[in-house]
Length: 244
Image (cartoon, rainbow, N blue to C red; front, side):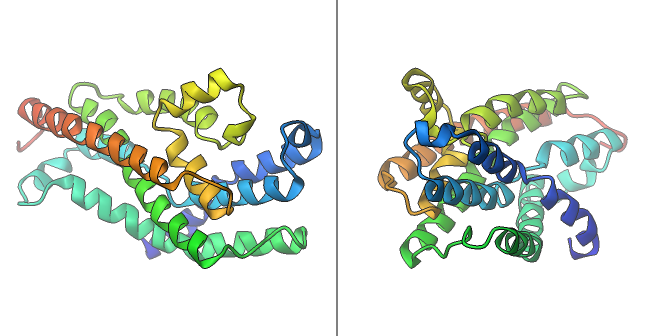
């Protein structure tokens, strides 16, 4: 991954949407109407930026390309599932992002003094655990879409459709408490808020039902894991490529 550090820098820059939304919300005055102070708003969106950086999943893109080019076949001959290879690649990419994210936060701190803050030790520990859990949840969700590559050569288009509810229901464009009650209930019934809103609020030091958050992530993982396993096995039975 370090060999592609320039590309990783571009990927990191592509995840600045929460910082853009911070500027939009700060300039609109809507935060005060929603009962959020400027400090709460800045801390939430900066935390969402960090969460977004370390929960990025690009499994579908590389898997689809490997399946179409026939590179998946030798992976399937190995005793370990190719999904572990892709999971390890994601962790490597996230580790190599750390200096780029630190530099971007430093630039934000220099451009707007007083905007950065240091979370408490408890909030930082819980936030890191929530980020890891949120990443695993998003990875499992994308595994489900990825298995459709066995049936379609353009399964990545379905993942782009999932980006729409992910962006609007996860808390990237707006904190969840600013949603109307009906929309908030709808969002909480999906896996998306637990991928961004929950870990971001933990990092920001906001009052959060920790047991509910981790319980919801665990429940969604337990639901998606057997479905993904069944689809993977079914897809392998119909997989065909040169040499396989």
